[in-house]
Amino acid sequence: MTLLIRRLLRIAPVIFILIGTLGLEVSAGERKLAYLVSDNRIPFWDIMARGIREQASELGYELSVHSADNVAKSELEATVAAIGRGVDGIILSPTNSSAAVTILKLAEQANIPVVISDIGAKSDNYVSYIESDNYQGAYDLGNLLASALHAKAWNNGTVGIVAIPQKRANGKARTEGFLKALDEQGVKSAGIYQQSDFSYRETYEFTRRLIQDHPQLRAVWLQGSDRYQGALDAIADAGKTGEILLICFDAEPEFIEMIETGALVGAGMQQPFLMGEKAVETMHRHLTGQTVEKVQRLPVLPVSGQNLKQLLPVIHRNVLGKTPQE
Image (cartoon, rainbow, N blue to C red; front, top):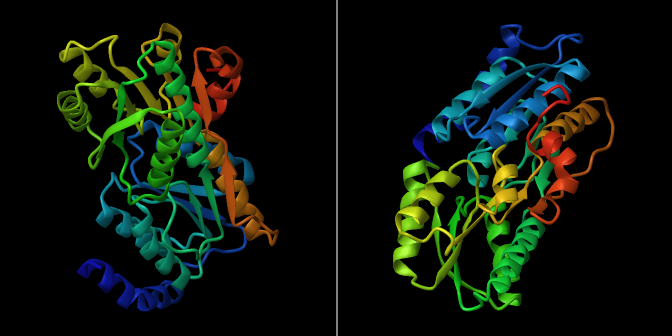
């Protein structure tokens, strides 16, 4: 535990007493929520924030959004700021499952309920956990990729993984589900690299290393989506376009065309807009004295050229957060 965290936990009771003394409690008619998000520069989190905003507005909550830009210190500062504002509830998408523990403890000491929307936490003192069914979604995606490899008679080819941090509960679930599908289909994995800064350069370099170190590589699975171009460029620069497939988790607007043209084998599309709506709805139910489920899992859509057209209406709204006007 870092010195900053220890200090925050030590002085937290004093902070919360001062909040009450300064009259920062929320009056009956002023309902406030805070959304603490790991990094809303990443489209997935920005879309989730839009779902949260829309549902919060519909239910009459004032909402503040705090992005940590993937920096743990900023996340803690945002937590203290939200508590200082006297919010009625916190919706949390933490930088990782371990960091969530401290945030939950600070909120608990301030008697503020927390709903976690994705990533997970190594603690259970929250109202509800909204998550994608990462294991099943990745399992379905592994089967989708294995079918594509078999169709090309690349049965001896291997699959490399550029993963999100495996400290995250969702990252572990994705890896386990995907590898189980590959194993059942008789496809071998090549290696795994964990992202830390989620940059183009990092994605490019990890993909380059997989290609260089594994001559039998026939596919790369990117456990995110927004840096897909880094993977494609590494494949192209190695002269392997058409010889190494790319499959992703999550979705970008351009994935629709890429799946149609075959530039992308497929994608396991989470539904961040729907998750955001569900998180606010769950918090509202809790604050109004209704019972909520401790864990709520939403399906991940395994999208390929075969089912893309059928799923487009759901993809536009729940995955990409597009309104009918857009």
